[in-house]
Length: 182
Image (tube, rainbow, N blue to C red):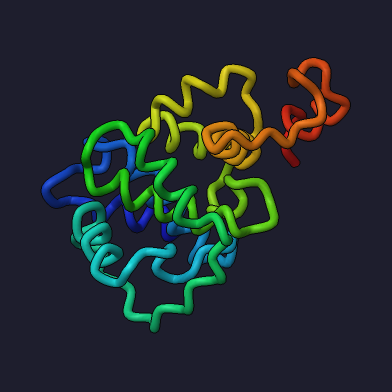
């Protein structure tokens, strides 16, 4: 219901179909507001960034007035994850930095990344990454689960190799990284 409401009130500088991030953000916000995922009220964003995101994508929806919840504990590697995502962003749009913050915040969750984000499906997460971090989407040739893939790429960049096998195809844990998500 919130998803539909957000898209119906999205008549401002952009129309609902003008930018695919509007649809993804509406799904993310609807999931978060209905208690799905692990994101706090402002999605892990600073108050000013959350307000700007809301005004840019849902200008006529009315900014939520609920008191922002505390941001959950950050993972120790938060700064490195955030910078890794920024290094793979599509361009220099503010929404890409916001999405990097949101994704990094959700990495503290215990479920699949799409679930921690409160999205309806892994497909939505794949769209979000392809739109905002296209180099990462292209690099995930084997369709590895996103949280595992992001961490694996970050570790490889830092010269840390924790996988027990020389390749994913030879690894006994392959089904946990590439298997279907429940």
